[in-house]
Structure formats: structure tokens, C-alpha cells
Amino acid sequence: MSLLMDVLRRFQFQKRRSPVHPSLLKKKEVRGRRTAAVMVGGLFLVSAVTAYFITDLLASRMEPAYPEARVSVRKVTTPAPERKEPETPPRPEPSTEKVQEEEPRSEERVEKPRTARLKPAEEIRKITEDIPRRAEEKPPARPPVLTVPPPEDTTTYLILADRHFREGNLQKSREYYEKANSVLRTEEIANNLLVVCVRTGDQDCVRKILAETPSEMVVYTYLMELLKAGLRERAVEEAEGYIHLDRRGYILFALGYAYETLGDYGRALENYGKAYRKNPHDPYLAYNYARLLDHMRRYRDAYSVYNRLKDFVKDPKIKKLVEERVRVLRIMGFGG
Image (cartoon, rainbow, N blue to C red; front, side, top):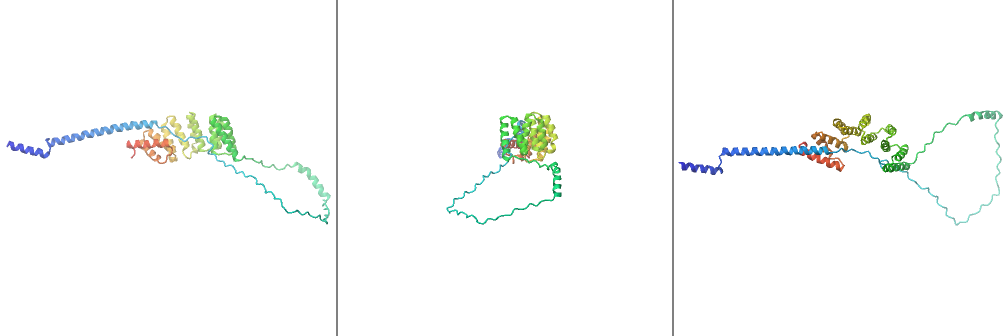
């Protein structure tokens, strides 16, 4: 009997192909699965924490980028008139024919002298009486003739102004910019003259230009010059005074940038957002809005702006940063 039981047990174990009891085998499999799940979960948690700190570190290193208002004369196009040389009349060729001398006329017409029509004495007296009165009357003043220099003179002024600006002679540069501005008033010339006036500290000149050319880009140039000089509070006050001129979001962007330099990230993000919604196709406005969203850990919103920006940004430096941020935020799980 014991031999029969032994044979049956061997046959059963051979059929299972394992010497371990089925109940114990199931417990071992469940325990292995739990161990594997714990290990995978731990690895995922470690990788997520590592990616979080890496992306936070990279986001804090991203610097703002903004369109600079540069002094340049290439924007001002004043085509010079074509000068035509006076045409010289063709010289008459000497004729080979003999010139026939005209014969003197034998008969000359004698004209009778014309008799003057004499005026009567009464009419002469009236004319002589009116002579003193007419002498007292002054002729009407003629309007002054304005002599406008030709366009090539304006281009010469701008070239000289730009050359002195590059050499650091701001007073001489301002002199030529003022001459060009008196001849031809454009936004570009006013923009360049404003930069020189701000850097020389002439506030009367600045106020005059802002009053004569109330343009969004001229005001933007003024605000960025104040920020470069470190006058942040003043830039905020000036930007809020000219916010009604904002059309394409540049004054709002300058205001947001001023708040960011002061450490007020809430107001900075608010103005960046307004500028982006007003002009979403400007790569600088979109980049700075996404950058500050990323800095404030609003990763899902930042990914949305980054992902849209990478399709139309042209600047290679910004394009590389944007593509890297899109890839990192997608790995972190914010690209859904």
C-alpha cells in the first residue's frame, strides 16, 4: 500500500513538473509580483523627483529675451531724385551750299508816327490826387517760401548722426538727428533722437519728442532705456501713463518686465499675459510669457505656449530653449 502511494505521488509531481505544492507556488508568484511592482514604483518615483528638480533648475536659468530698440539709419528710406544731365543741342553741320546774299530792298516802308491820346485836364487831376493815397497803402504780404532740402541731405544727416553715435559723441549725434528730424519727421528718426536724449539726460528733449510723436514703439524705446539705466520704479510710472497708446502689446510687455525686475512676479505675469493675448504671434512676447509661467511652476500652461511657439519662432537661441522645454515637460507628463 505504501509502495502504491509512493508511485502515485511521483506520478503527480512529474505531471506538475515541480516538487513544490501548488498552493505554495501561487504564494511565491504573488510575492514576486508585489516585489516587482514595488521596485518599478520606486524607480518611477525617483525618476519623477529627479526630473522635477532638473526642470526646476533649468527653468530658473532661463533669461528674458526682448526686442531691442536699436539706433539704425537703415530703416529710414529717402530715395534721392534722379539727376538728369542737361541735353546739349546738336551742333549744326556746316553746309556746303553757298549762302546767297540778300539783295537790299529798294523800297522801304515808312510808318507814320502814332499820335498819343491825350487825357482831359479833369482826369489828370484825379490821377494826381490819388498818387499820395496809393503810396500810403502797403502791398499785401506774400507767404514765405519754404525751402525744403532734397532727400539726399536727410540721408547725409542720418549717416553722420549714426557715425557719431557709434563713436560715442552723443552731442554731435543729437545735432544731426535734430537736423534730420526738422526736415523729415518719421517714427524711426524720432526713435533714434529719443535714445540720444535719454542717454544725455535731457528730459526737455524727451518730453518734446514724446509729445510730437506719441507712438507705441517710441514709448517702448523710452521705457527700455529707463530699465537699462536701472530706473525701474520710474519705468513703471511712465508705462502706466502711456498704456493707452499700446496697440501691439509692447508697452504692456515693458511694464511686465519692469515688475519682474522689481520681483513682483504676479503683476509681471499679468502684464505678460495681456501682451501675449494682444499679440500672440510675436515670438518675444510669447517666449517671456511661457518662461514666467514655467518659473512659477505652472507647467501645463507653459507647455501649451511653448508648444505653439516652437512652430513660428525664428531666433535659433530661443528656438533651442523652447524645444528643450517642450521635451522635458512632455517627459514630466504635462504635455497632455
